[in-house]
Length: 371
Image 1: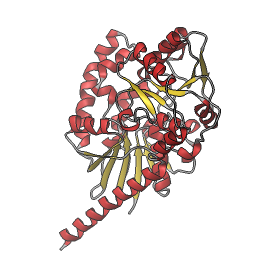
Image 2: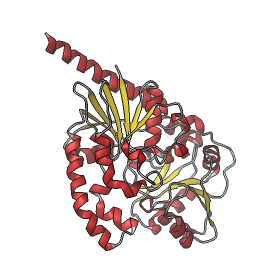
Image 3: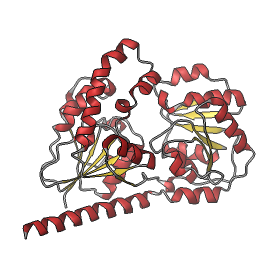
Image 4: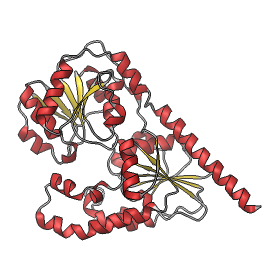
């Protein structure tokens, strides 16, 4: 069984790219195909991977300004040459599922979400503060992307969703069913400590849809220390909102993140994510999470055990949840035990079982057809 892995683009490193790294560990001989690669930002776990890019790799400035090249990715994805592979595992939140599937190959798509900026365009561009003329100019292309997204879903033999929220979006957008397999969490990287310090923590890319502004505004009201790890285009706006007890630490190493998570009072997770690995990483360090009640957090937060929800996407609701968390006692061992149910080993076992079963059925069908 020859396996190939396909991903949208490898120019930013987040939860989706960690899924690619886990797939690479499972199938180390499988090459990775992607539209664009930035090796300076590649996860260390992918440093030994054989990675092939599309013609888009040669476009000027695409690694730095990859979002500006939006129209390039659908045709670039279609030119990836996957002939000779039996099983194609695409990791997709946008374009990778749109590959040309060679005759006889099985295409399994691990879907992080149907294309968010196509299907939630108005909310997306309002958060990105695009000017009105740009929104109007893009709208016809967004309609094309929606059609392309639905059309290319037909080339997928089987979908895997990373959460029950995404499973429902796949059903609504594509009219398809999906198996849910949660993304891998590297729980071994995190260790609880006895001494917790007096700060709450956010670990995130600083982009508008992550709703870090809600955390800043809530902690402005609470007067409690909030430390924010990460960087991104929303940084200066957030700094302008923040009072002195809200600190911006920028990018830090993985080891520093693990240490900060172990010592924080709790992790604040204010946006609605497709899944969200960061809350489970904090849980693996023994710390509770205060999360917005939506998206992937519905699969991972058990109220009173490993965290609390807030129900309205506003600063007052988040502040009220933090106050409730302050009045509770938290069992670090129980919190970590919950996180271990999402460990990388669980993900790898489920993916391997899924792929092996699909291939067994395909082989049985081929043998029957031959008779």
